[in-house]
Amino acid sequence: MDVIEAITERKSIRDFKKDLVPQPVIREILEIACRAPSAMNTQPWEFTVVGNDVLDSVRHAIVEKLKAGERPHSEHSVVGWPAESVYRHRQVELAKQLFQLMDIKREDSDKRSQWVERGFRFFDAPAGR
Image (cartoon, rainbow, N blue to C red):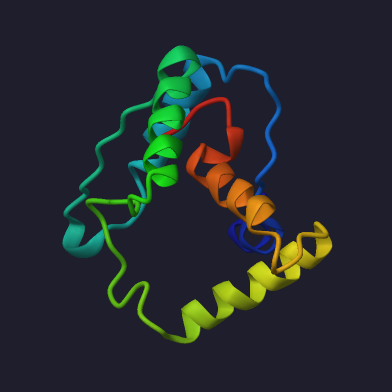
């Protein structure tokens, strides 16, 4: 696969098999990821890969905080996010389309909350970062 094909054929997947990802595969992915360009060549990569009980515990803790009304916190931010911008508008429009496809009505706060929680559970992926 060449670069152009990799870019044009890429997909964002939010549904995962329950199969465990073999450690050598995770290691190889991270080694390749470390070669990605970074601002001013700072290469600020730090990875913690969790799975099984640890991942379940992290998911549970995040969802409980979310249910308690705590806003998600990240040490990393995107400049201007989540300020109103073209990106925020795109996010909202995409969510509307996605919810329509999944038959989640605007007034159905339970189903919308379940979808948000799924994101904070790493979309139920078998490994999380």
